[in-house]
Length: 567
Image (cartoon, rainbow, N blue to C red; front, side, top):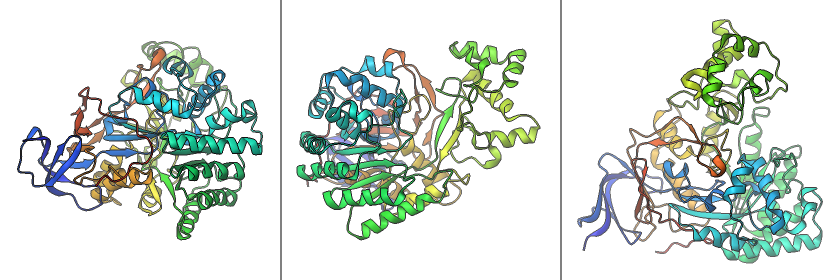
């Protein structure tokens, strides 16, 4: 009897970190059944000659919490080889929730993750209250890929404390006890973990800080004990680590020590304090030496804004002249911005409000082949100096080129020294995980769900120096991430494990330029970024994408809790 699927003659990067080796992969009933030389035929066969065969990528840092309730595809992650996505990060999400609190959670997600409130209003059905009921609602909709959910502190705190949470009041002992019980219930219902935010950068659309900002160590440690009560669950945390870095680090240590649960914390280079990340990573290494399970989630490139006429912001957003045309169609904006008299008026103005993100010395043309490690000399300021004109004039020229579809890249982290050496060092650490792609979030200004493709191309093939072995990069994108969140049934190409796979034409693999689509509920816009080079992406043995085109297959499921190795 033939196998359901045979991938024939590829270079297998099995997810364990070794050098890719020639071989075949056979799949039956959604499970890998043979690896090596497969003599039997397949009902379907994929010729992978001269191509890379990897496990499906596991993205542990997404924000599809709303999108997952109305969309089965979860693009753009599905275009970049992701077969498992974990959402609910940074303490934001939509359950648990009282019926009269929907607006509060929408405002929080809109402000923190730049997902328009109108999109969430129209797209979310709200047929749940408890976290378990939310999981049930997600499970009812078929999806292309597997989804895991985490319990968000913002929603949990508001559910227990109501408006006292919005006012950042300290939780009472009764509040803390209730949150611990609800955390345990969420884990038992199938949550993969619990997440929280302690950064001033996270605010609601009305300007309020995230409800979890000032949660005490007692509150957080007690919630972590709810995970211990349930016997599973990971913890994810984001913090400014300022002004009390030592206090924040001790909080992380105590949560891990008392609960025994694994913790990951977001880590990036801050342009204002470019060496602080080293201190944080060093402290985490000391915690690991104590026997604690603590890691940092890091990015493979700068986290940066895409500024353009279609984006949420561009360098002229605060200029009165631009504001007079901001609501016009893109074509009309371009026509007006090309008018010499209007350009003269615009460039002669002072913005109504200066935004510190608009620093022309750290702003670059993204280009048709996106360049995420541009040289200092490629900045708009440097180009203006070479031409002897104002930097704003160069920015305006770039924005109106290509009929207004261009984007300018403005890195705000991981680029203090105008190179990615800090990312190289973070990625190489034994105490980090690849994450922070934020798929589903920041839809009008950031497009980082392409991290997996960038990781392989830039760090495995294209960077002139400091590259990593491809097999090791695949391991970090697959088994390392899967195992970090308790998913032991995937991430490795081996008999008996999940048949989540990618077939990749590595020589052709590339990130395409980002584009703006208007396909969200209520006509909302979002940045999308496709990839070239994925011959096939396979979930549970079914091909969901072939040469970048969806097949319509929807084999993905909601993941309920940690998954053991079935072998």
